[in-house]
Length: 243
Ligand SMILES: Nc1ncnc2c1ncn2[C@@H]1O[C@H](COP(=O)(O)OP(=O)(O)OP(=O)(O)O)[C@@H](O)[C@H]1O
Ligand SMILES: Nc1ccn([C@@H]2O[C@H](COP(=O)(O)O)[C@@H](O)[C@H]2O)c(=O)n1
Image (cartoon, rainbow, N blue to C red):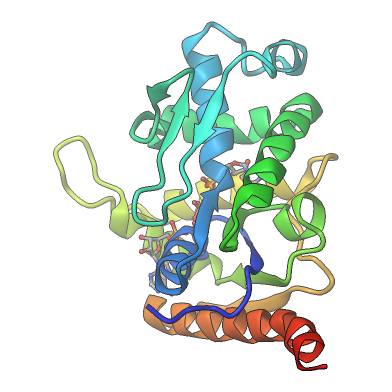
């Protein structure tokens, strides 16, 4: 593990299936940083609402319930825990039911306010620095992050990656690439077109097109960017100490 010279705050955003989670976890683990999966938080609040009789097609019902669940996130990149009201949600938040409802829940302003506050407090407590991944981290949650990365990939590459990890009920790999691509496009459209902090590249983010890169190449690229940002952040204090 190579050490970063300063506690950096890193924002990694991008559409679904571009490699945000895999890259962020690996970069954080390699550099000894904390890690926050903000998508898991939106999934956890969605799961709680589905389990507690909230009509997730009704924005008013979602808004009224937004403050109710206690969402807790772990920040260890090797074991990124997530729970709602103390119940481990790491498995159930990945179901199709949650995936289908999460964009509608996360579009409600009261949900975003609640989860954004939680994200900022977790980032503020990360004494050794943190990698935070999501859709609006560079634009809204942490606009003063030391480094902002926006990952992209072609729709075909993203669908192929997602199909590779999805299994049918009898354990066979999902082969309907067209349907997977369509589902990803629908979620991206909903996430990019909502009024409150939509999925968007921050003006000062570094865009990395991962279409033709292996995961290892993307990780290496982002590690280099983080090390540079950390060195730049440490520079003024080094200069001050030398005076
Ligand atoms: N550069 C890459 N080349 C090949 N496969 C990749 C690459 N990056 C990620 N993957 C694979 O693609 C899948 C999706 O990656 P990941 O979950 O990290 O994406 P994501 O952007 O976090 O998606 P989402 O926003 O939907 O959670 C994973 O199976 C991962 O191993
Ligand atoms: N900063 C974020 C992160 C996520 N969302 C919403 O959550 C959904 C699930 O995210 P995954 O990364 O786990 O796929 C995503 O589709 C968004 O609706 C968000 O709004 N802001």
